[in-house]
Length: 114
Figure (cartoon, rainbow, N blue to C red):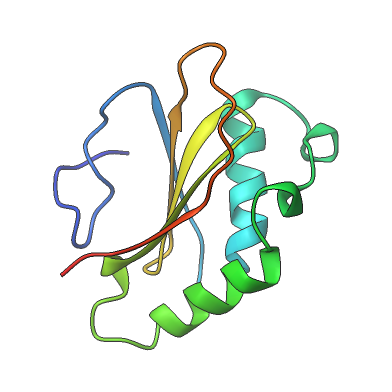
Protein backbone atom coordinates (compact mmCIF):
# COMPACT_ATOMS: atom_id res chain seq x y z
CA UNK A 1 0.00 0.00 0.00
CA UNK A 2 1.45 3.40 -0.89
CA UNK A 3 0.24 6.93 -1.51
CA UNK A 4 1.75 10.38 -1.87
CA UNK A 5 -0.10 12.12 0.98
CA UNK A 6 2.16 12.28 4.05
CA UNK A 7 -0.57 13.80 6.22
CA UNK A 8 -2.94 10.84 6.35
CA UNK A 9 -1.80 8.08 4.04
CA UNK A 10 1.48 6.20 3.79
CA UNK A 11 4.19 8.00 1.81
CA UNK A 12 5.11 7.22 -1.75
CA UNK A 13 7.96 4.77 -2.00
CA UNK A 14 11.42 6.32 -2.31
CA UNK A 15 12.97 2.86 -2.61
CA UNK A 16 11.93 -0.67 -1.67
CA UNK A 17 9.38 -0.19 1.09
CA UNK A 18 6.95 -2.10 3.24
CA UNK A 19 4.02 -0.40 4.94
CA UNK A 20 2.05 -1.81 7.85
CA UNK A 21 -0.69 -0.44 10.06
CA UNK A 22 -1.60 -0.95 13.67
CA UNK A 23 -4.72 -0.21 15.69
CA UNK A 24 -4.95 2.26 18.60
CA UNK A 25 -5.08 -0.58 21.12
CA UNK A 26 -1.89 -2.16 19.72
CA UNK A 27 1.64 -1.24 20.79
CA UNK A 28 3.69 0.55 18.15
CA UNK A 29 6.77 -1.37 19.27
CA UNK A 30 5.11 -4.72 18.56
CA UNK A 31 3.92 -3.40 15.19
CA UNK A 32 7.50 -2.47 14.24
CA UNK A 33 8.83 -5.93 15.06
CA UNK A 34 5.97 -7.60 13.17
CA UNK A 35 6.43 -5.32 10.14
CA UNK A 36 10.19 -6.00 9.99
CA UNK A 37 9.56 -9.72 10.41
CA UNK A 38 7.05 -9.72 7.54
CA UNK A 39 9.20 -7.55 5.26
CA UNK A 40 12.40 -9.52 5.86
CA UNK A 41 10.91 -13.00 6.04
CA UNK A 42 12.69 -13.53 9.36
CA UNK A 43 10.79 -14.86 12.39
CA UNK A 44 10.31 -12.10 14.95
CA UNK A 45 12.11 -14.08 17.67
CA UNK A 46 15.22 -14.24 15.44
CA UNK A 47 15.40 -10.42 15.11
CA UNK A 48 17.66 -8.41 17.38
CA UNK A 49 15.87 -6.84 20.35
CA UNK A 50 14.12 -3.60 19.43
CA UNK A 51 15.43 -2.06 22.66
CA UNK A 52 18.92 -2.15 21.12
CA UNK A 53 17.88 0.82 18.94
CA UNK A 54 14.87 2.44 20.64
CA UNK A 55 13.15 2.17 24.03
CA UNK A 56 9.92 0.26 23.25
CA UNK A 57 7.95 1.77 26.16
CA UNK A 58 8.94 5.29 25.11
CA UNK A 59 7.92 4.56 21.51
CA UNK A 60 4.54 3.23 22.67
CA UNK A 61 4.02 6.25 24.94
CA UNK A 62 4.88 8.75 22.19
CA UNK A 63 2.50 7.12 19.73
CA UNK A 64 -0.28 6.85 22.32
CA UNK A 65 0.11 10.57 23.07
CA UNK A 66 0.16 11.47 19.35
CA UNK A 67 -3.13 9.64 18.79
CA UNK A 68 -4.81 12.12 21.15
CA UNK A 69 -3.76 15.15 19.09
CA UNK A 70 -5.57 16.75 16.17
CA UNK A 71 -2.78 15.77 13.75
CA UNK A 72 -1.39 12.35 14.75
CA UNK A 73 0.22 11.78 11.33
CA UNK A 74 2.54 14.71 11.98
CA UNK A 75 4.04 12.96 15.00
CA UNK A 76 6.71 10.56 13.76
CA UNK A 77 9.74 8.75 15.05
CA UNK A 78 12.43 7.45 12.73
CA UNK A 79 15.22 4.99 13.41
CA UNK A 80 17.05 2.12 11.73
CA UNK A 81 16.47 -1.49 12.69
CA UNK A 82 17.48 -4.77 11.07
CA UNK A 83 18.49 -3.21 7.74
CA UNK A 84 15.51 -0.86 7.42
CA UNK A 85 14.87 2.82 7.93
CA UNK A 86 11.77 2.69 10.11
CA UNK A 87 9.23 5.50 10.31
CA UNK A 88 6.51 5.13 12.95
CA UNK A 89 3.65 7.58 12.66
CA UNK A 90 1.17 8.52 15.35
CA UNK A 91 -1.75 7.66 13.08
CA UNK A 92 -0.86 3.96 13.05
CA UNK A 93 1.49 3.53 10.10
CA UNK A 94 4.87 1.80 10.13
CA UNK A 95 6.86 2.47 6.96
CA UNK A 96 10.04 0.51 6.26
CA UNK A 97 12.57 1.49 3.64
CA UNK A 98 15.35 -0.95 2.84
CA UNK A 99 18.77 0.46 3.66
CA UNK A 100 21.56 0.23 1.09
CA UNK A 101 23.71 -2.88 1.56
CA UNK A 102 26.18 -2.52 4.39
CA UNK A 103 24.35 0.33 6.13
CA UNK A 104 23.87 -0.37 9.81
CA UNK A 105 23.09 3.01 11.37
CA UNK A 106 20.90 2.80 14.45
CA UNK A 107 20.23 6.42 15.37
CA UNK A 108 16.72 7.38 16.42
CA UNK A 109 15.25 10.70 15.37
CA UNK A 110 12.02 12.30 16.55
CA UNK A 111 10.27 14.10 13.74
CA UNK A 112 7.40 16.50 14.22
CA UNK A 113 6.58 18.50 11.11
CA UNK A 114 4.25 21.44 10.85
